[in-house]
Length: 426
Ligand SMILES: [Zn+2]
Image (cartoon, rainbow, N blue to C red; front, side, top):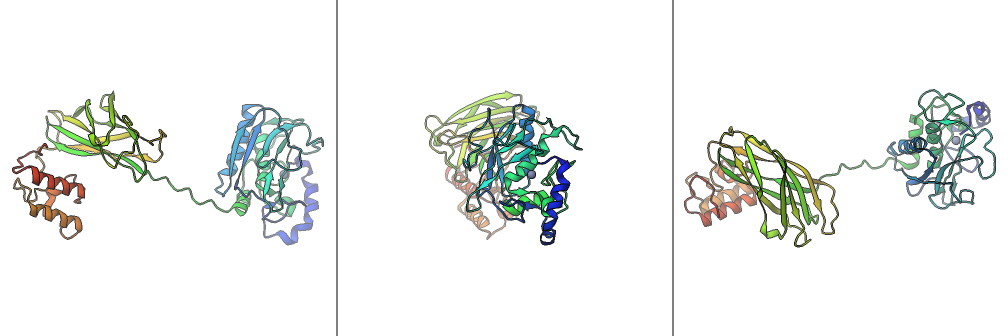
């Protein structure tokens, strides 16, 4: 980047190009100066900057400048590494590949800076793929970091590096292509201290839009179940895993609840014996329990389904209402011990009711689950009957009859002749 006093000279030279470039704002680099885009670019859609500017505020200014370009939304991202000492190899012919040190120097490979405050030496191969672009920052002039109007003789490192990193991206000076646009990529220092619309259009023309980053959908679910009971009763809450095909060997989650109405003794949490894991549970605080399902004695993947069950006691004075069992700090680990991303969990609840719920499958509320009841539930599940034909089949109240609920009803029919007013305990 040049000092502003020489902009007029550069502009005069560039007027030769006005006629053929009016459709363009931004400019791209070429071996003969600024040209309309496209020009050389990074085939990898990114570059790594090795920054060694001596002080944390200068390094931070460089990081901010790199991030400004990465944030445009083009299919180009800068990676920043902080280095120390002076770089080597920057005066070799070209390369090494992706070697882009950013550093103070008192010359550009032995040539004085002249009126230049910083310079990026971009080189590219015969396929127009940029190989590297070291950024030389003139150590013989004064530097600071500030926003707003340019106040010589202090040069603002952030805006100058923003400009130089634009060169590394592949952009050149629009003003030297006969354009009069607001742009950090214009050749002189000015009051412009941030990327302008023309700069953003430039990087987008070289690297198009990145596909919108998909919002990561939590694919691993650790879900707290729900139960219903009366004041003074105990209910069992089942926490289950739905891993969407991921291999999960261990889990963690918190359960928080209204400790005035509910109590959960961690010692009464039991791992599902069928998954072959161990369980550790403890109280984090009042109304807050943390449960780990640990990969002991084995690290094999846990099948989807119940992880563990905790007994929740409903206070004798609990008012009838729905008390949430809030899920938190969900985590899952692979058989290799890596923490998996995309883990979430649904809350559960304890419904405190003065009227007990009918047992699953007791469609006619006659304290029996019959084959006819089960067929009714199957028909509701298949869409051939409506839920009101067997509301007692919808144990969790989600408006649907699920396979789990049909299996529970079958279990009830097989094991319990006279259901009574409470759920059967196998
Ligand atoms: Zn420049």
